[in-house]
Image 1: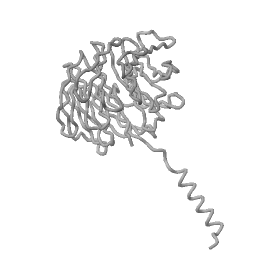
Image 2: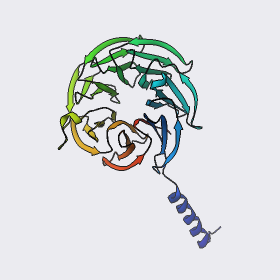
Image 3: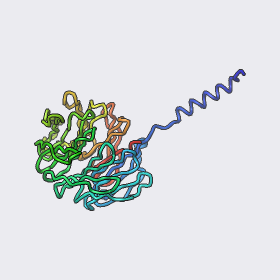
Image 4: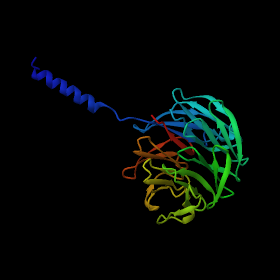
Length: 327
């Protein structure tokens, strides 16, 4: 049967309208606000605040289950890990964290949470399914930074006062290597291939790149921003793109995020964001990285393709940690 011209045109127009009307996919951004005991939920597409969740005291470290169903949150002054249902935004249970949990890392299989307990110099290992403590690992003084290799075999904790990165075998829960880094190490990020661990030192002003095979420092990255005193440049959060080509380093009161070429270890750019930039998180599509800016009480969306800030969004008081839904 011959298709009528007006019918064909109408069908084509409807198809075109359907394609162009499809909205871009939005991810939910979850921000822990240390001072006002809340988590702010932001729509990544509209950049609008969706809701604010009341949580425990002094929320800092924040992460999400691999299926996106639950947020895990360090309620530091309540000495617990709160579990938040992402569908209802309600706290549904807690996990036994040990005293003063600050940061943690989730195992690649999603079954185990490794928690830095700042006050008692321990890393607490938690079985998420049973909600029980598997073991406690003694580490250096004031543990904070936590990272885990992509294969899940090696976990690294940093101790702020001991100035060490402790490499821990996740099967035996034993420290295999202690690597001395610069003053006040705060964060650990593995490269996607698992060959390097990047450790930021807040007071030292450096990022130590540690070879995961030899456990030796292969490079120390330093930062210089024209017009700023060196003591204001304090590396904290570190994130590396999924292709392993670029690293982003939050520089604290310098109010910038450094963009580093991971092949040359050279800083390519400094991105101006809000005041006292603390932690970072990518959207799953890797198109955007988000910074928490503690003193200006906002987060900044940065375009990964151009390394330009796109927009800042006001959240709660003293935003500390950030995580993005995986779907």
